[in-house]
Length: 310
Image (cartoon, rainbow, N blue to C red):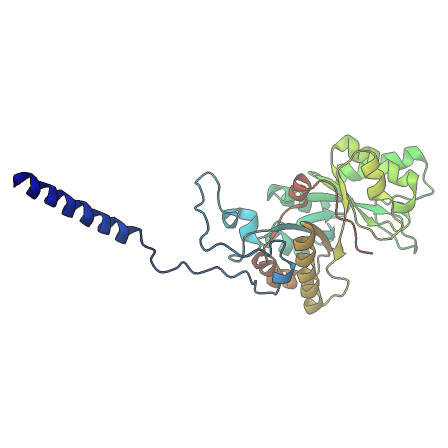
């Protein structure tokens, strides 16, 4: 009898434990599915159309969230996880520090392209580099329309030694640069001899080359790539029209290009309308899943590419 009673007690206790364990493992209320629709309609451009999982895996301490990085946070808070990189280069800097400082004070990793030999060139370049921004030498090159590119311009009628010396002087005039792009140059960037003078010094300086593509017949990026330099071309201009609403449309287009191709590069200018549009448009980029980075960081991620628009 004692054996039977002991066996019965064991069975009842075992069955109760199973019921308790089953209750603990039963699913609770379902985890809400995150929405893939961004606030500015970039869902159709998303490179990942597959359905999202019910619950995202836990992130280890060694892998910080992209939202926590300074660069991504500066482009706007919240939104989808970054899926692409974009860089915005502010050309023609060095002319007016008070006007251009607004782009430095904007909490975003904008890249500044600084013209040489202007009153505020050195001050702006040093301050930008001190803030961790990418700084480019905005190399003045001859235009096809006869416009003056400004001090330090490279012209077709210069001899080889004069060209080489002018390029070196321009590099010395803008401290802390990590790259070079052309200012004007619709004629200069089509001249193999002028282009070679720029690229040989870029190779000595160890900097990358951005072709601003001021003409469809430019050979700057092509020749740089042939020399083994890190290079790419701009994808679009943001402020052909000095109008906030039109610039915002181009910022959205930049995000679209980045999401479709992985990276994108835009050029803009230090104008009040551009600054105002960036304040509104950069958070929209971030919400779309595009992380704004300095151009040096984009080159580290994708050294060659960015075929320009036709």
